Image 1 (cartoon, one colour):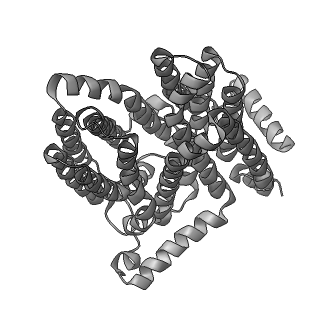
Image 2: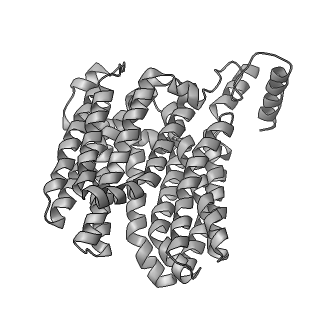
Length: 443
């Protein structure tokens, strides 16, 4: 680490003296691209715009369904939760297998067909009359999305150079979290003005827009001809095993995957309990609940900006580890101090820290994974996301009833500290690629 520090110091002195601008990661490597630089890449800009509109449509549909079940059908909390579970389960189960096919298929065609199928399925929500129909439609939409997600990751990696991946992932995350904040209010206004079906029509239209944008992108990706033609169960199993083995035997990728799983579990576990925490621990009302809940999204959006600006010269795995430590600290503050303003700061910190986990984790995965395995590895990340969200939804209520919300938050903070310590020890002997390159050059 001292050697790396001296290298960074020398590079900094050269830049200060007017030497050539170089990356802080390794001498001779290209300078990291900014958010603006990445948006100048025509193909990525179209991909980003397509997803910006599509994500907004998705959230409009989700909140439209929640409004429908809650206020028109007078559904129970369990029924609302079941909708989310129906959406999460396919990504956890189908996702890993979907990645095997994505690594064999034309990703552009896969994304366009996925968008068109989802557009048709979402239109089905206009005609639903029973909860079971919503469950089935959400299950099917999620199944199709299991093929779209890995295809999008492969496309991003194909369109964006390695030194622009951090900015590209930050932009994708910002789009997701910004729409997550805007969508509830937008859905409420749409339902009030135009009725529930307006949310579903707009979501369907967003998928058509996405498909149209994707059709204009040129995606050049080499696919192993032998793998593409082999369609036996044995060959599929072999590909799946190879992808799983790569994840499990790559220390940095396996760690950031666990870190992402932890972050999503905390977010999914805390989100439905914040209202109870505000009521029972803070003795506050709906206004405080709205502000405190919104601070998570604000932290996520600002965190993606900051991590993109400050973390480009650092090892991605250690940036994710710092996010895990930050998540531990913010959770401790939330559990130990029962004041509304500190609760807001803590929720902001939770969102901010999660951004420091998710963005570098996605970037590391795209940088370190061979192109012919990227679909499988991405689908594994998606499955981890989904499982952690599912466990958070299923366990949070029961645990809170058993030990109380405050004790649940405290226990989560302790576990996060332990996991952070284990992560530090795990990664201590795993030298980053840039340090290995410097060591090899000096030998």
